[in-house]
Length: 181
Image (cartoon, rainbow, N blue to C red):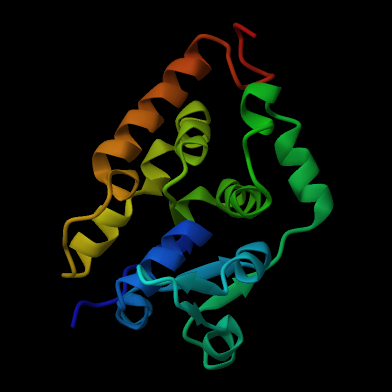
């Protein structure tokens, strides 16, 4: 078994649901230290199979057993974070993503954030902490579970949107305090 890494892994709801669909959630949390925001915990509680069957899951058991960590951010923290951005970014960030980005930005060296939403990687690129974003493809590769995944979970997707966010930041787009804004 691969050892857990030093950085904590922040997972967005879309990634969690995909891990459950692949039936590898338990293996991932055994091999990586995972942190879930309270909003993500409330968003991700079921998935539907290809046949339309609803499969429920409960994060409370994982948190109670110490298999994953849960955190919440204060409204004031979220407001302060959002105030950094123009509507180009702030209007696209959903509550679960916002919570993860707030936690990551408070201490970037402690976390990696895994999502399949372009705005997450654009924000990380614009904030110049792109190295703290990680694709599900890379997470699974690191822990010996590599497999083909849909594009939005790929390294290529992360790189594309991180680069776009970085370029937007350089052009003064997205960030309010950009020298070009």
